[in-house]
Image (cartoon, rainbow, N blue to C red; front, side, top):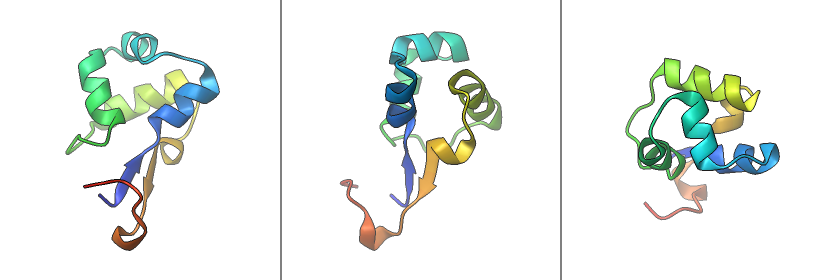
Length: 75
């Protein structure tokens, strides 16, 4: 998939667990896992804004575009 989600990178930088992030953002850990693992088809701007607020980052720190030829993940 050309859009890569780097939530796990920010979680590691902030030394925060998935459960803590989910609780602070106000979504279920299961829904956060879907987003974190790149299986989500969409993300609400309100959710993205909440993630950025809690992780103290910019949307570009969480999402990046990668050309299909350079993808390292299995689709």
